[in-house]
Image (cartoon, rainbow, N blue to C red; front, side):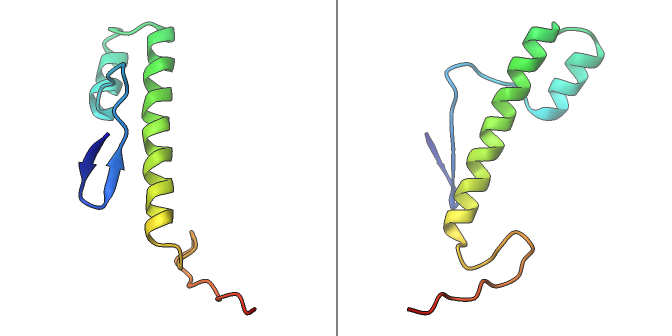
Amino acid sequence: MVRCPRLWILECSMGHYPLDELIERWRREDLTVEQMIGQMLQVLREQEHRLREVRRLVPSVDMNGMEREKQRG
C-alpha cells in the first residue's frame, strides 16, 4: 500500500492502466475482452477501496451529503 493524502491506494500485483488509457487501448483494439475485463475489475476494486476509506474518514456524512443523526443511548 502507498500512502496518499488521507487515502490508501491499494497496489495490485498486476498493474492496471489509468482509465483514459484503458479506454484508448480498447478503442485501438490493443486489449482482448479478457484483458479488458481484468483491467476493469482492478479499477473497480481500487475505486471501492477508496470509497470505503472516504466513508471511514467521514463517518458523520451519508452518501447524500446529509449529516447523520447521532444515535442516542
